[in-house]
Image (cartoon, helix red, strand yellow):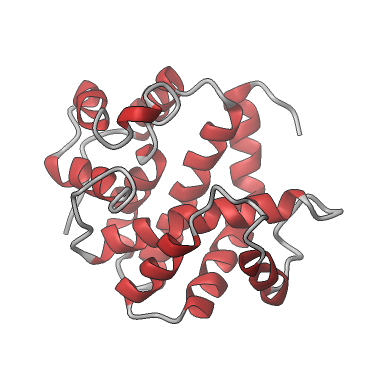
Length: 200
């Protein structure tokens, strides 16, 4: 069983140190929640802290060092003495885009698959009258996925490849990630508002 010695308090502090944009803090919290959900859903609940930590810190270097994304991360993660397994998981989530380190185990494949998709779901939620994904149907998400002009920065190729690496259909990945975000949206938004000083 993999555990992390990095406390969540340390992780939040590191995330905020290198990420001032509220969106990036929210994204980290969102992917953390999705990863914790996935850990429980696939029978790895005892590793939920480790999975969540990888999600929380996966983009720690993106805001300040976009040109060195996934390359600067090990240096920043060393500030909290992150274990090699956690560093590897974080570095490989950018495989094929900004990293040549390949996702190997189940958790790394989930992080790779879910990261871009959470961004797409989040963008789609903002367009809804409710500004929420809790009332979003899978069919609506699939339409947004097919519209390449919508949230163009979210790589559809990475999302497809992520599903394939998990041995899932694209629809299954969308359905489960949407379910994970629905389950955690309220708590994530509330914490993000506190951490960034933004009220919802």
